[in-house]
Image 1 (spheres, rainbow, N blue to C red):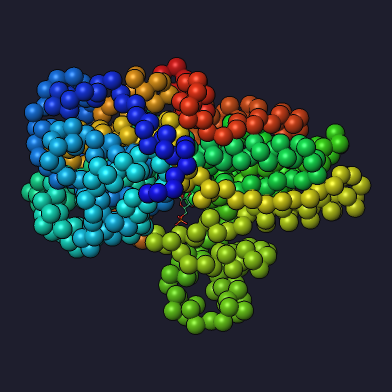
Image 2: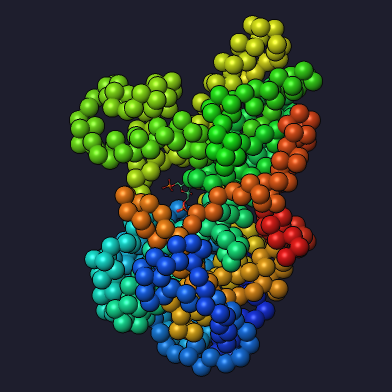
Length: 553
Ligand code: FBP
């Protein structure tokens, strides 16, 4: 790599922090196993489905002895799904752990996501290569992809690829779906008597792969800091110009963790939380009314500007839209060929005709642009690609229309000019914050230690994340204990439970306690850009979500 910035050059040399227990020679780190575990629900069925890996104990590491960590082995790594800051550091952590054990061990990177292992596309990750990617954002070292590794045929093909290259362990870096499949793959190989090990690492900026044992998914920290910087900048602009309402849609396919964290960091005038919308069965009209109320009250104080955060997945949490989208998904899946033959100009009418009366009415009430976005190609799971639906524009139009009515009735005297933004891809490949750089490197290093301890079907874990890295607890969690059964394509399937925003959780409660003040009285906070060098409290701070969740633990 020739042209690099001074910051990037400095970041190459940053040495990520590790939990105290896993520092030093890997042969002097011992595994400690706890009591057998249970799945979060559906225990009996899951026990039958995951014959070989159900109920394994939680693992932690401590100083001791593990001569097997010095064996010469080959390991393969896969990056799966959407980019998240810190992926390169997971690979760097695996690489350094592996070479610490035996300098002749080799790390292979499967190219382009799970498809790489199925098709046998891989490269060796050498020191020269990894050194160019340490502490950098992106997944470009080996690329990522959204192919699902889920059929027996794919499992067998992957096994053959690994056997041909003498790869004895695979590390899958992914979200809830990829880690579900990693655990099923581990169980399949173990059931067949194959010794190949499979370990997962929790990745996604969305922050929805978390539970009691996996405190956060990597990338969430950096991405929310990037978005919060941008939101803070827009808030300063709004407060300077005093003439616009900025509607900012924030990524996060389903859960509103990103929007909530950004709200805690920046104190905007309003942040819609999808989970609350669903719980309280708010319609689109109610969501709009809440914003209109803020605009009217602020106008009465002479403030005709503001910032509203909109979660990317909102549309799927609004009751009437949820039903509409579910019907649309079925319709487009079952009549895909018929739909493909219809002229673009006729598509909306065809869809409205083929839906139930309620959904047809909901569909017809939407502007043509949103109708078209709802009919775009589905993702590999058959879901609407919410990142392409411009909910923030729809909200602006609906708020403006309602304000016009209020103006005519003499109930509103202000001015409303809405501007829309979407922050998502801007944050997914940012250079990882110190937290993500350290967390990811630790996850990768621990993934190697789990392999060196002979485990399979585990997810690499770091606990006590809100504390300094030296106090972090390194270990592994049997992925099966995060499973429950969910209906997928008409069948009950074992899957990792997606973590939505908990309405009884500390971060949401904190937001609710303050939001009405922030709504009317301009209380913006401007977090500024991520700092990599400087005081620890500035550079190594975890997210507000983690701090609130971990308080008192
Ligand atoms: P992962 O769950 O794979 O980490 O991806 C999440 C995400 O970044 C969502 O926030 C967003 O809706 C989606 O990916 C966008 O997908 P794509 O990268 O395919 O456009």
